[in-house]
Length: 501
Image (cartoon, rainbow, N blue to C red; front, side, top):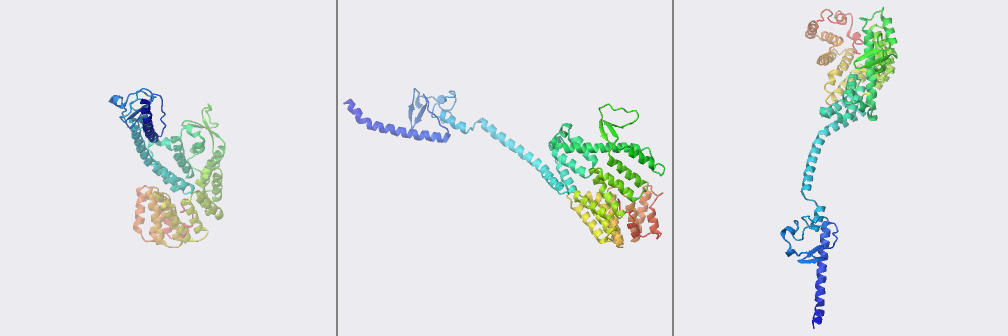
């Protein structure tokens, strides 16, 4: 009877266990999906399914567990895992927490993330102007707009704190290369020494800085030696001209020994090299520059002057940038117009914003082509170019006066004295702004004041001469000769004495 009763209930029991198994499997799959990890069942591991405790070993039921023994997270299953029996969480909850760790470490990480983001935003805001101006400067430099590039690089540098100088060596390198092209020797040597350590200069990426610095220091040393030689002469006369030229010739290839602030020329009496000096060699290009000054001061023929200028330019790429405007203007003066025109194109290729190019073209228009209006238009174009350079207001008085004078001379050739006077006044005001009024500019302004009947301005200029203690010399002989009718303004405009070369 008993066995029969058991057999009769077997179907219901099996159905109930199958239902429990199905529910257990669904809950297990759900837990696995939420945690995205497989939680393997081990010995003594316990699962609770809808109020039933399925065990594989001895364990307490939910009702038998105290609150301190239950999982802190779900509050249903017993705390502790195989890896960490003392864990406050059950295996399932710990698996989920490992996947989504919203604990104190996560909170700290989140706070740190926010902090780093804020710092990054501040740093980004600081560096954006620097790199933006740097990119604009490099674009201008690559396009040979050197004055615009200079302004952009300076804008970038203005956003750098002094203590951060070492972080922007690429920017300082670019400005050094630019100043080299702008023939600013002092700035190149100063920046190279200030921002680049000896270690940095040995790096392949900064080899240009090291080479340029060494080249210019060599030139500076040469200049000092030449000045020592010329310092022995108060003036250049027919009697000492050959002697001075001989001493300049003797400097060629001579070694210069430099240690700290001291320098000594090879063969100097009382000096013996110790081997600790930096050794340089007298730069022939600079020697030829001083020979040019010598022949000019001695009043030698313009062709001789052009010869030494040409030698200086041929001997140094750096000096060529300085010499070419002067050499091209000299070629115009001696009628070698093709050479002047070729140099003008070279000047423009080096720097599209060069006023020297406009100056030479204007001179060619006046001397060779007799196209005075073209000469005027060329100068106006150059002045407009200077005015268009962003933040380049200082360029107009510093460089624009040259074009104002060329414009004035072309107006004189057209006998448009009113316009010539306005242009001369413009030129004079530019030089006054930079405290560098030249005799030629002052005298031409004075003569045009007389030509247009502005006697008050003429008297004012006379008073300025007295104020500056020049009453002994006064105006040049050109002004007197013009007042006396011995020379015309056109003759003076074509004399070459007012080209400001």
